[in-house]
Length: 180
Ligand SMILES: Cc1cc2nc3c(=O)[nH]c(=O)nc-3n(C[C@H](O)[C@H](O)[C@H](O)COP(=O)(O)O)c2cc1C
Figure (cartoon, rainbow, N blue to C red):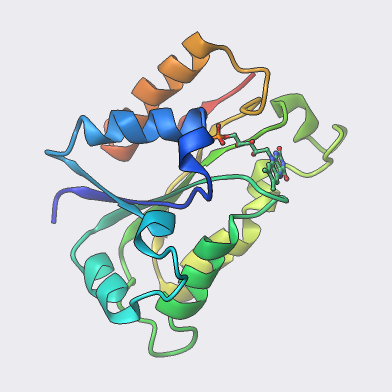
C-alpha cells in the first residue's frame, strides 16, 4: 500500500500538546496517512495480535510515534513489540518494510550530547529500536524528533514541527530532527 501507517502510542493523548497536534495534522492527510492509536484501541491492553500483524502487512512504510518516557517508549508500545513482532525466525513479515520513529522529547537537545546532562544521544537511546528493526530485516528510517517538548518549545515551533512531521511521514522530506 502506498499509504503510510503511523502507530501512535501516547498514554494521555488528551492532555498532550505535541503528539496531539501531530495527530491532528496527520488526520488532515488521510488520503496518504493512516493513524492507529494503541492506547485507544487497547484500553484493556489485550492486543489483537493477528489484527496487528495483518495491518502491518498492508503497509510498506510505518512510523512509530510516541513521547520519550524514561528514555524509552510508553509501555503499551513495548507490549505491542513483544506480542506482535514475534521474536525469532517466524518474524519475517516485516522484512523490507521502511520503519521509523517519531518522538517528542521533553528535555532540550543540548542535554542529549555526550557532554550534556543526559550524556547519551538520541541515536544511542534508540538503539533497542534500531536493533529490533535490523532483527526483522526492516529498513531503518532516520528518526523525527522534537526536543524541548515538555516546556521550552513554543506554540509556533509545535506548529512548524507538525508541518514538518507530515512531510516526514509522507516521505516528502529527508531526515528531520527539530531542535531547541
Ligand atoms: C512518565 C514520563 C517519563 C518521561 N521521561 C522523559 C525522558 O526520559 N526524557 C525526556 O527528555 N523527557 C521525558 N519526559 C517528558 C516527555 O517526553 C514529554 O512530556 C513529552 O514528550 C511531551 O509530549 P506531549 O505534549 O505529546 O505529551 C517524560 C514524561 C513522562 C510523563
